[in-house]
Amino acid sequence: MLLWSLLVIFAAVTEQADSLTLVAPSSVFEGDSIVLKCQGEQNWKIQKMAYHKDNKELSVFKKVSDFLIQSAVLSDSGNYFCSIKGNIFLWDKRSNIVKIKVQELFQHPVLTASSFQPIEGGPVSLKCETQLSPQRLDVQLQFCFFRENQVLGSSWSSSPELQIPAMWSEDTGSYWCEAETVTHRIRKQSLQFQIHVQRIPISNVSLETRAPGGQVTEGQKLILLCSVTAGTGNVTFSWYREATGTSLGMKTQHSLSAELEIPAVKESDAGKYYCRADNGHESIQSKVVNIPVRIPVSRPVLTLRSPGAQTAVGDLLELHCEALRGSPPILYRFYHEDVTLGNSSAPSGGGAPFNLSLTAEHSGNYSCEADNGLGAQHSEAVPVSISGPDGHRRDLMTARVLWGLFGVLGFTGVVLLLYSLFHKISGESSTTNEPRADCRLNPQEFTYSSPIPKMEELQPVYVNVGSVDVDVVYSQVWSIQQPESSANIRTLLEDKDSQVIYSSVKKS
Image (cartoon, rainbow, N blue to C red):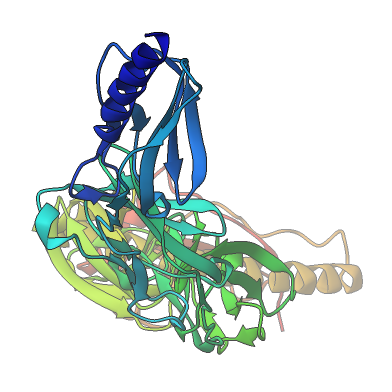
């Protein structure tokens, strides 16, 4: 009876073991979850349950449990089954074998570049190429690019392309890309590729100036532009003055040109300049450029020149205007009471004259203006007073009268000097006791040695006084103007106020 019972129980357990089944998903892609179920009677009295892959035990449970693969990968493909071991009679049973193949969600990306040997300074386009499984086209991917373990661009992006505007020699290195699902379950990396940036040597270095108005002017800003037509990489620009050979400045940048600024140019900055450029291959020098500095005119000085001490109508007045500083050519303008008279130019600098024939209306203030295109400067006003024609004639008449008086007085002095000398000589040889003749003035006894000539200016008249038989002769000297008649002569001689000078002259 006991034996029969044992046989019934064994048969029941065997029947239950034959119903052990492994349940698994039919289609699996990378990143999917895989749940394996070992199904049978739920009230089994088991000692352990195990899941196996390719005859290798994956996991063991002490009760009925599922086996979970959180995110499937390609290496999870294989043959799976489960097994249980019972508590009674220590029976052991295996489930059916289920073959699971994990499918690739997207292919490994491939990095491509517009050029793997780009010219320095040129752009490069990188692309991370991959393809989704036709059954999972709805999956979203994102991409990232790397150079020598350094992330390029803005890290992860939905775009499979990356544009690099300019490649430099320091950008040479290994590049790769990665692609992953937005759920971060699956990430794949491309193979690494070497990109070598090619550097171009410097060529055609030139120096040019940039100044307001196109000309270098004292006090204004000057820019020295050094440029090259070819050359890549970091270019070092430097500027020099030929006279000294010392560097005026230096700049290093990723550019084909650079500027050096002189904030305020001085007259001493005029001279010859050049620049050099170097990107590591060879330092190349530009041609020497001569830079002249133009000087604005200073305030001019107006000088007036006339024939006499006083300006009069009819005189030729010379106006001379001169600016002591200023680059030629200089144009001078002349003004009378702010009305333009005319202009004169100085092609080589210095001053310039302007001649004016004076009229009565030319009295007033005169000024001039200097301009060499860099700003005009005005002189101070100079006043001029012009005499009329009558006054001019009066001045001439007065001058002539004065010269006539000086002539008469000079001649009279000479006569008196000679007469005094002759009287001294005759006095020494004559007797001192001889009677002297009456020397009273008698106008009626005057005789004239010669008729009075007609003259326009003052002339002397000589008169002998005394009797003929005396050895001393007195002479009377008068200074009179030309009389209109003989009656005027007698009137003048009888005038009590007339000055009479007597001198003894030895009679021959």
